[in-house]
Length: 590
Image (tube, rainbow, N blue to C red):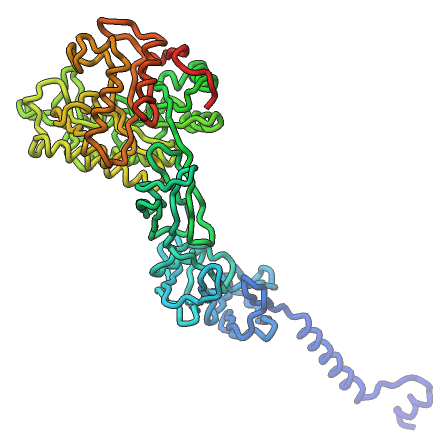
């Protein structure tokens, strides 16, 4: 027998020569399937960063391989051993985030693409009216911005390549400029408010207040004879403030209605002066605040820039810091907060031209000495800045603006004049020096500050010599009453009876006639500024000086009575030692 037959019949299993080949192919096939299923891959998904929606058709590249995401934003690539970066091509209207992927790291990637196209519609606030012709752009703090586009007839717009962290800026004639954070959105529908506000300013009794100022940042208007005003150029954000001398300012946040009517409350300021030293001492400050709380007093005059040219708070004005003028003497923010809690009207006193700090740092801005060629100094050896210089005006106005932003109700300029003592013949102002030029310089300084403060609803006052109410000239110092009355809210003459020369006003010793000196001075000054909006609020003496009677409750009260009999909008008590005569004050509450 053959061996094959033998094996069969012997009952032993014999391998078929065909079966091993078949089984080898099957094993290899399974191994290949397992390899294909288990081989490493790079996978991920690409989505819209804002909505999370998948982005299909986005090209993804890696190590020479290219693929596109499917309808679900998914992609798959084969990894390589080399350390090669994976890149995603930004599709139209998107900017895709860079990926930190390298071979050997996580193989599942989540890639987001930020939309860079912004679209939307502009309409008039409180209505469905579309706004065509409005200019729109987007910009960020790094200087990146889109080209401007203009809304179409339906108020629609579309911006391409909008940078990251951008703000939308909208501007159009007749509408308030608007800036808004774009955030995480690609559709931005907006409403715009007209930038023109109208309304009326009235007193509490309903009477119109002609000449009242209505202001917002970048815009001011003057009420007409009927109290009506039209304020153009009002920004989208911020307050609108109405004020008039003798009235408390009223601030209103504009809403959707382009009409704002104001009702102003009468204001009679009854103030005392507080030095920076007293303000810095808690005990003194609290004692004077208690005096205000228990009497008719309702206002406080606070030094914020003194006769040394020092700013007594933490000013952020670059020039002040550069010249070493910032010398905080107290926590002004805390003090102002306390005054608001006690309903105290806060007045910032700013010493203007008597400023040796600025004169030394900027000698070209100082009053010069024609004899020596150096800086001129007064009889006390103190340098003055030159009120002819616009740079000095700007510095002074910047201080006034900072006071307004800190929360003061009013700014009061003292020493707003040219020097009055020393070698006057040696003064060199670098410009024609006569009554007209001096008066104009003081007028222009006050106007600059007044215009800026009017946008913030803060009043401006000017301290002047008492003689300015009587002498029509500028007395060599630029304080010409008629000019000053045009550009301030309050005129604060220092009509201290003790400072009038013997024989003045027909009195051998004016100091002994407190009521008459105050009343007659105010009446005389008032005759010279008929029609002016500015109101008188005189400084009164609460101190004894020179020969004559001592000043106590009767003398102080007589001065106060004179202001009321005249019809002034208040009074200010001066005592350099901050000691005031409480017995001269009424105990009633404000």
